[in-house]
Image 1 (spheres, rainbow, N blue to C red):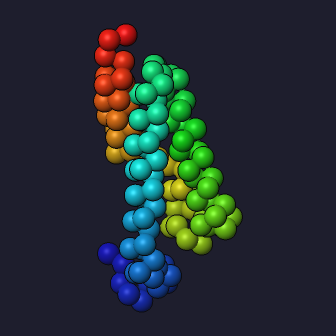
Image 2 (image 1 turned 180 degrees about the vertical axis):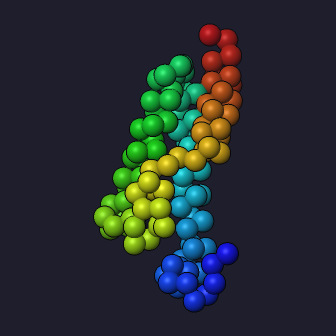
Image 3 (image 1 turned 180 degrees about the horizontal axis):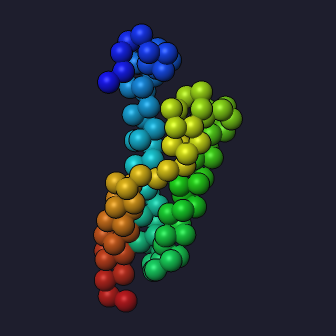
Length: 109
């Protein structure tokens, strides 16, 4: 375990770490909306996952350009890799919402 005198620990400011929770929320909502769009449009197979990839990349780009001002390493411990990583829970959320909306909209097709 790292001690408070460790230089890496001193670079982490606790309120900023708590603020990074909003990044998780934005990624989660982006996955939900992308799943809803994929289901409503009736996308199947790789087309739906391509929409998810486009959603993740566009959300990451907006956060990179606006919130991180082109320097994600300054705001995130993992840098660009953490910013682009969709997270396993967001992939499952996308699939859940995708199948839900596909089933609701295209039930009689």
